[in-house]
Amino acid sequence: MASTQERDLVRRLAHAISADTGVEGCSGQQAIDDDDALLEKVAALPSGSSRLRIWENRNCLVTTRAIARRENFAEAAKLSARSGWPVHVRSSGGTTVIHRPGILNVSLAVAGGAERVQPNASYSDLSALLQTAFHKLHLEAFVGPVVGAYCDGNYNLCLHGRKIAGTASRIVRRKNQTAHICHASIVIYGSPERDISLISKFERGVGLDHVYATSSHTSLANIMGLSPV
Image (cartoon, rainbow, N blue to C red; front, side, top):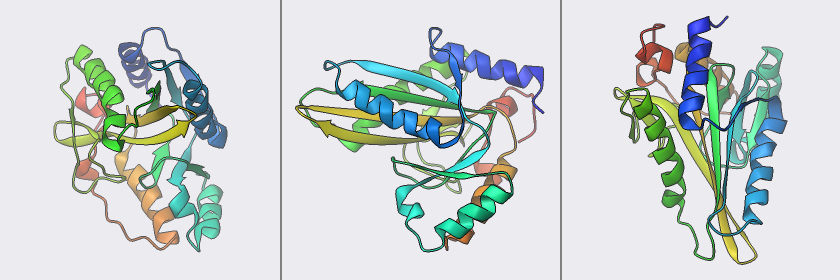
């Protein structure tokens, strides 16, 4: 069970990201689908419009459509669900990640106008927003890959050389406008070792043999001296 200090860290970071946006308590696949709905809503708004979600999900794994097409997906998902970690599927790329209390999800959808948005550019607004939020907590975050991290990518958010958040994005073209959504999962508290174990077990079930390192990950609670790695 989370301590009062750990839950306070969730509130502090959410407030630093946006004082006007409440933290949604979400559940399962619907929470994932709400990002797709948000993207479609923003795509119908005037160019330059944006909408922000900050949310926590219940215990689950979230994987990609590509992984969901693998031959053994249904059986691996069933086994994970039996252990209390149902598997849901998102539209954006990457590999499998974990959602749970203690991981703060942030989704930013932007209406980009007539110009097509390059995949790399879709990360810029959210990365800047999160780096500013960490700066308010007197922490300097940088963006980049981390060897040994699960769902590693060029747009991880990192503290002290370790991954604290993964990001993914999706871009759509609707009529004469390009819109994109970028989302991040930020580890506020909890055990990276357990997270890696759950992800690795599921991935082995679908025939993937990625090897991850606990030392490549951290949490905000760890950085603030409230919990071990």
